[in-house]
Structure formats: C-alpha cells, structure tokens
Amino acid sequence: MEKVTLEIEGMTCNGCVKSVNKVLESLSGVSSVHVTLQPGEAQIEFDPNLTDINTLKQAIEGAGFDVSG
Image 1: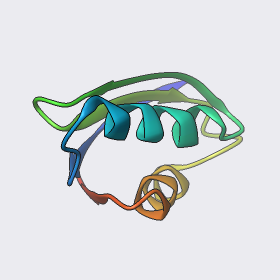
Image 2 (image 1 turned 180 degrees about the vertical axis):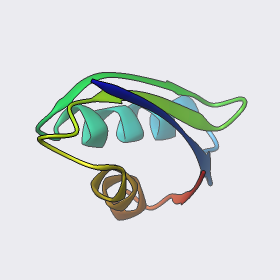
Image 3 (image 1 turned 60 degrees about the vertical axis):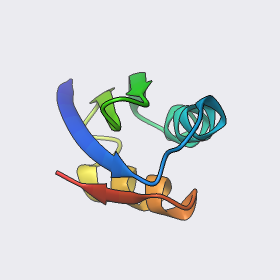
C-alpha cells in the first residue's frame, strides 16, 4: 500500500468533501480516504498495483476540483 496527500482547490463546503470522498472510494485499489475542507486536501491509501496517482487526480478533477501536490 502507498499513501499520498493531494492538495485540492475549489472545495467550499462539506458537500464538496463528500463528493471527493465518493469518487475516490469508488476507485479500484483505494483502501482509505480522508478528505478535509481546511486545509483542502485528501489523504489516500491505495494499492499501486491497481491504481496510480494520475488516476486519483483525474477522478478528483472529474468531480470538478483542481489538484496539486
């Protein structure tokens, strides 16, 4: 398992946090997700054999948010 923290821009409420949680948890290989509004970030634990950081970023961006880190 690998862990990564991604900075997320554009989250303004708990609904945004829930949206990011939902898209990340739906990905194959993601074992845990912790998204916080302040600071805007997601801590993700995932199996690198099943997914990668680019896929995680694309999922967040697909939900309408910007990712850095």
